[in-house]
Length: 118
Image (cartoon, rainbow, N blue to C red; front, side):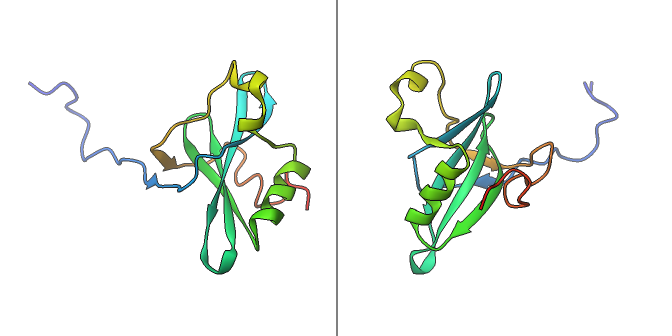
């Protein structure tokens, strides 16, 4: 007996994204909602900021020439380093790997410039 006789095919598993950082940055964007960021290394000293929802969904990314530029940009845009804020750590936890490719309801909100100050 099939429990779901009309279900055909295989449900797609979301694409897993492996990030080599655990130094979270966070921006509280609303009641019980945060946007998280991790900075990862790329070629030629470049870095990439990956933006992650509470669910572990990586919904956007930006590339910077150095980690210093990335950190300055995060701070300019309201992000703070999670490890530096004991009070924040007392009531919220960052999303844990495995991360997966996803989207934001409003699209690529940071790389589009919609919610990103240069």
